[in-house]
Image 1 (cartoon, one colour):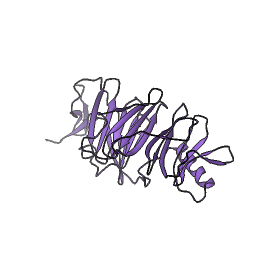
Image 2 (cartoon, one colour):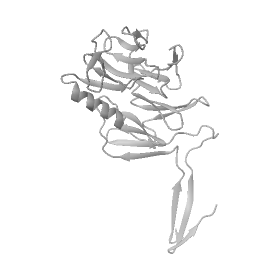
Image 3 (cartoon, helix red, strand yellow):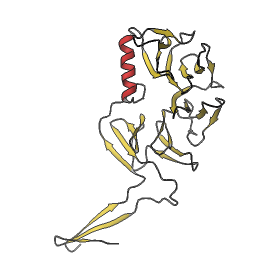
Image 4 (cartoon, helix red, strand yellow):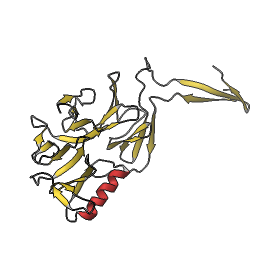
Length: 272
């Protein structure tokens, strides 16, 4: 107006920054870190003819491999393999805790727990539920996502009892794609259409939909922890999200602030 130009900045709204960029997601909707990728590549070189679905290191540092012919483990550095259980049911995913217990998802057997030194696994989920993802955080708490949107936590050093986690579960019954923990200790769950962030200390949580105006993605494929942020990945898009500070009360939507007024080419900075 009258030769003046007004420049406005927005306060960061929930720490969300969206990007349009190609990001290739694996077919099983899981993004692997470097160590996981190295394990699986090494397993593929030594286990010719087997499909490698997942891999991890157990409490003794031995490599356990989830294959289409059961759960296998390297007995030595030369990759001489042994069958971990008596079953050859295809194993889709596997994690190991600090005490040597293996948790794995069999295609027919479902989610199972195999105690150290045992060959007979124990089923973990009841009522016909199917595990869709596993995450062992801090080597002590096993987080389980299911195909009907439920999330359970299992303290591996105690009774192995599954405790429902309503703050991370999806009331719509949508499949849990992944569970992650950020640098602040918040636990996240992701479905195709929503993200949930849970601060265990304050027992506070929030829900972000893929259609959130700052996200505006068709759907989510995966969730990755990137430094202080988490990265929600979608088709040709990704979105960096900062964890929420649940200790700050009354979080409001983004408010516009006038940062600079330029009149006839001269800047006038606003101080309040």
